[in-house]
Amino acid sequence: MAASKLTFNFLLLSFLASLLIPEISLCDHSRQPKRHVAMFLFGDSIFDAGNNNYINNISVFYRANYWPYGETFFHFPTGRFTNGRLIVDFIATKIGLPFVPPYLQPGINFTNGVNFASAGAGVFPLANPEVISLRMQLSNFKNVAISMEEQIGDKEAKKLRSQAVYATCVGANDYTYFVDNYPNATQLEQDEFVNNMVGNLTDFVKELYNLGARKFAILNVGPRGCQPAARQSEDLRGDECDEVSLEMIKKHNSAASKAIKELESKLSGFKYSIADFYTILLDMIKHPKDYGKYI
Ligand SMILES: *[C@@H]1O[C@H](CO)[C@@H](O)[C@H](O)[C@H]1NC(C)=O
Ligand SMILES: *[C@@H]1O[C@H](CO)[C@@H](O)[C@H](O)[C@H]1NC(C)=O
Ligand SMILES: *[C@@H]1O[C@H](CO)[C@@H](O)[C@H](O)[C@H]1NC(C)=O
Ligand SMILES: *[C@@H]1O[C@H](CO)[C@@H](O)[C@H](O)[C@H]1NC(C)=O
Image (cartoon, rainbow, N blue to C red; front, side):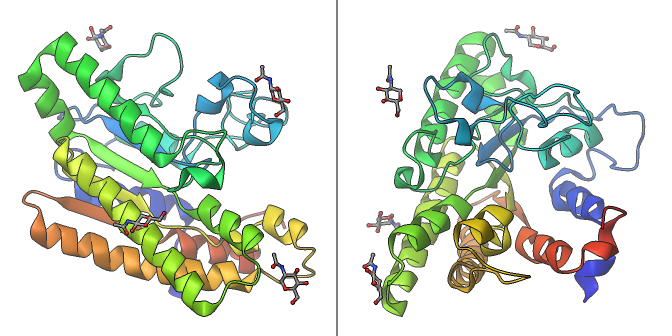
């Protein structure tokens, strides 16, 4: 498979390349972008850099503020669901930005962008009502847009928003919710859920566009059914994965790609890049030896 020859880092770099080049050279080690570009980040634990730390009384399940999270890079748990950095941290560094701060962190400055992502979040609030759903993340972005206008004026704020990159990774938690709550769903019900997901996700992108966003970077939905938590909760053995969610997610990713492509033809100035997180991550899970020294 071609994907196994790609390194994950290559995916990260090529992910934003179509949106950022030629303004910024990804090979330029000076770390100084020729033109400043902010990043606004939306989604779930794949992108959350610590927003959930600031939600009161949330279950420990949605938090990553304890050891061993953070052990290899920050050397303390930051709220990121990883031992090291997030995909969006690597991207920020490569384009000469500091790590994009979480929206709920007190005293943040929007100049380099804001991270609205919340671990556990879904397109639908039902996925995990305790955390910040995609809808709520959009409404938080609107608050930031208002304070931008107050602080730097309408014209500069509009420019910052139109030059910024809007990156999103969301959907896996909705499919977890669906398979957990509707184990006996018919094919028709599954397809209807996928259609509603893609429709609501497309509406989210359109609303961001209407608020001045032009450059979209989308990480598609990963193979949730092969992730350890899903395998454990369904008591799967060996390399078995939850096939129902994998099938639904494959349909989702293919329908979402089509829907976003259609937006490009309808909305003037709309640019996007979709990284195939599903294929890359599934390949890493199936062929771990191709990716490093840990197995
Ligand atoms: C905190 O969460 C627990 C468990 O969900 C609930 O029983 C309790 O009432 C909550 N406390 C507050 C102050 O909301
Ligand atoms: C935000 O940070 C930028 C760059 O560091 C700085 O120029 C600007 O004044 C800051 N804005 C506020 C409101 O602190
Ligand atoms: C799903 O079907 C199984 C077997 O037919 C049944 O035992 C179970 O109660 C059903 N679950 C739900 C949530 O309807
Ligand atoms: C969004 O999802 C709801 C179900 O939660 C559905 O009724 C609605 O049609 C969806 N919107 C789009 C544009 O698909």
